[in-house]
Each structure stands twice: as C-alpha cells, then as structure tokens.
Amino acid sequence: MKKLSFICFVLWAVTICGCVTHPAIVWNESLPDEEMVTIYWITAGVNPVSYNGINIDWNLKKTGWNPIKIPEGVVTFELKGKQYDSGPGYRYVYNWDGISFSFNFEKGREYTVSPLYATINVYDGKSNGMGKKNLIEAIRPEWERK
Image (spheres, rainbow, N blue to C red):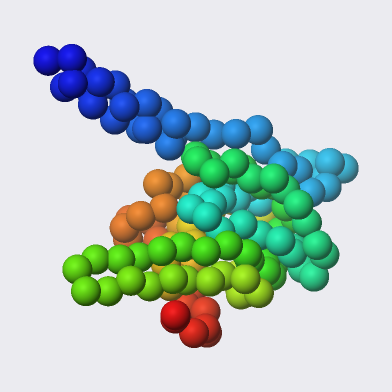
C-alpha cells in the first residue's frame, strides 16, 4: 500500500509541476499589453537562443509554461537543444541547434509554442502542447535526423 501511495504522490507531483506557469519575460516594458503577444513556451529540452537575430538568454524553466511577452508581427526564433525519441528497434536524436522558425504573431493574442521531436507546434491560446486541439500550425524544419 505504501508503494501505491508513493506512486500516486509522484504522479500528482509531476502533474502539478508540469502545469506551472512561471513569471512572464517581457521583451519591451514600454509597450502596453494590448500591443503585445503572449507566448507560452513549453521547452521540452528546446529553448530559443535568438529573437529576430538578437541573442537572448531567457533562462526558461524546464517544466511548465514559460510566458514570453513580445511585440506583434513576424518573429524569427533560432533554437537550441536536443530531444530523444525511441522505441522498439529505433532511436532518434533531434538536434535543434541552429534551427530557426518564423511565425506571424498577432497583437493581443496568446499562443503556445511547443517544439516536439521533428515539429514546432503553434497553438491558439494556452495549450498543453500536445495533440491537434487548437493547433494553428505545425512547422517542420529542414534538418538531418541522426
């Protein structure tokens, strides 16, 4: 019974930690909220290292949603990180270093960005970053799968 209780506690803790929203990173404090876009970034091992060609270090948390407030418009993010996918008879390593993607973010809206394996998913609003519900676009960057 203690083992079952421990397993239930661990599952509860993982669920709670995965649903945490961290304090927002604001790119330009002088702009009002209605001129900004809020992006909930789900890292999953992949972080932005460049915003429109400007190097950034936003120190995003590894779990939960990382809210980022930026001005509207077409934004290009360069990414860095690795993800692993494996199963019976296969193992893929997705190296995101140097991979870029662009998206037109509209002011006053909220989005979720979730780089997951070979796809960068952009969702309408705050999403868990999985599935197709509220999926706006699935961006498949060009790269080598190793």
